[in-house]
Image (cartoon, rainbow, N blue to C red; front, side, top):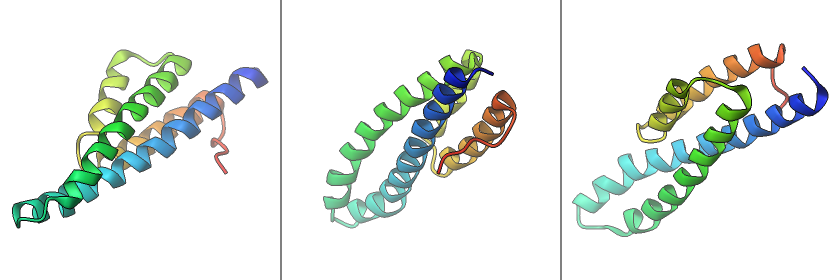
Length: 113
C-alpha cells in the first residue's frame, strides 16, 4: 500500500475510532442515565446529552462513510457500522471488528497514538 493511501486510511480510521467511542459513551449515558432520570422527573440530562449525541452521531456517520469509501468495503459493512451507533455498547464491539479489518488492509496494526 502506498504511503499516501496508507496515511489516508490511518487518518480515516482514527477519525472513525474517536467518533465511535464518543457516540458509544454518549449513547450509554443517554440510555442508562438520562432516560431513567427523565422517567423520574428530571429531564435535564436528556435535554443536554440527547442533542449532543445526535450531533456526534451525524459526525460519526460521515467518519464511517469516509472509512468505508477508502477501504472499498461493501455497503453491508457500512450498515453494521451505522446501526452500531444506535445500540448501546455496539459501537465498541463494531469498532474492534473494524480495527481488525483495517489491520488486514494495512498489513499491520493501525498506529493511532
